[in-house]
Length: 367
Image 1 (cartoon, helix red, strand yellow):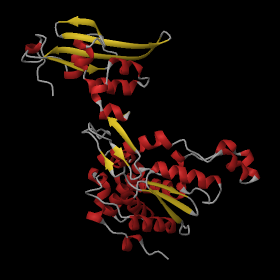
Image 2 (cartoon, one colour):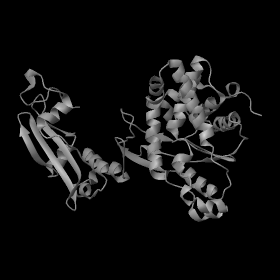
Image 3 (cartoon, rainbow, N blue to C red):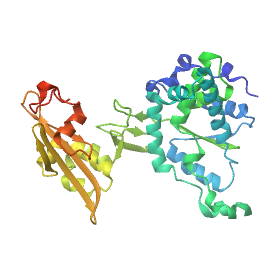
Image 4 (cartoon, helix red, strand yellow):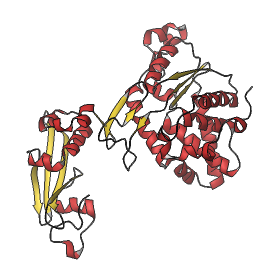
């Protein structure tokens, strides 16, 4: 029988790992599979469930496929995410809110940190690919007669498990409670799972865990971003390339010299199209005829490009051009598509000009 979680599970740097953005760097924070498995057993014990069979997968994508096959056959038992994760987390958040006498403050503390932002970015990419995976219809219907009336209630991967953002938040909650008066075994076990696994899908008889990414690259705003290779990669080789949080085709990052106006116009996904322009640079996009001027004033020029399909506007891109403070070069910066004048665009970028900066030049050099 498992003992108390606080006497078994190791506390790396006082359980602060769940609070650190560096926890996503496998070189600095290597995962411990044994600790994750012990966390699973303790989490099941804390909610009155017998120890499950633990199945490891190399990525959430591999996990989703294995989970769907097993659930179609009815082998793993009922999904217990609401008991194992949702209930302990909600109760812990309520306790923290009561201690702080402010539920909003508790929510801010639990959700606004870099580690959770990175976890949310990773989870968003995974769910976009595997979130709708569910058991095949025919095996699901053939399990029992009652499933013939539940064809529309097949579970989906996105809601059957817990990704890195949720596991990170549970770890943060366990740490906050431990600083005060001690946390529960259920939250402490979830902390251990989150520190050493990348995804959790709990069922009554089987619990699936996926390995954490072996590569995560982000920018200063904690968006997935890498200029030279994949921004996210798992052990099975599944990876995604990203530019400032936008998932793009691999060739856009690996062969940016191949980006042309024709490829930009052929792209049907607006965020990817804008990322391609950003990689190409707004200056080059304009100089090659990708946009036309729609407004001029003393401060600069506003450029625009509109894409339509069967007479309907499907995307619009705008940028403002002006001179640098030294006057030695021009600066072109993308702005929101609702900008109507160069003055409004520059005010959006830099704020209203001072009285000595109304000569049409920027008040500072662009980065």
